[in-house]
Length: 157
Image (tube, rainbow, N blue to C red; front, side, top):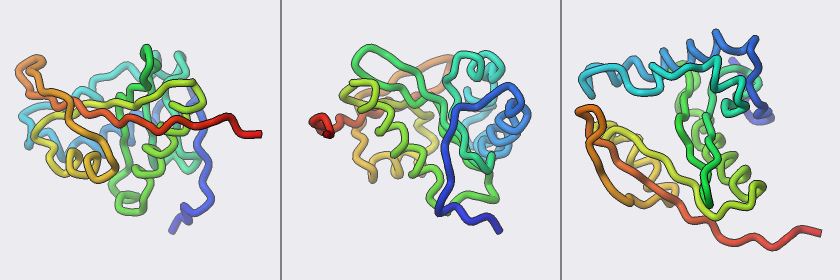
């Protein structure tokens, strides 16, 4: 059993690509029947995302987050945790890491989107302070947009 109390988060490198793709596949497979097809993260080009420095992994390679800098906000494009490691707080830690990165980049909010049929994910995000900002249809799927405005931090001395 892996102890996650002192894990590190680092940017993924090309050597991590197979593990990254496996984490995503394993984490999202359960949603295929719920939403009627592969979730968008299963179709992403992880070689390009890793090369662009957008993929961050838990050093145990049990979880990942994909972050995209946007004007004023940091977009969480994907959070995935291996099913065998779910329920241990890894997703929440990665979301907290996204907030830390948001502050470090001088941005004031973090945003994400998910399929409206992924209700357990939406409930988790809302429990962490995200609020729904809109819904839209993309490629025949209903998407829920969520955002969390972060308190302003003064510079640490």
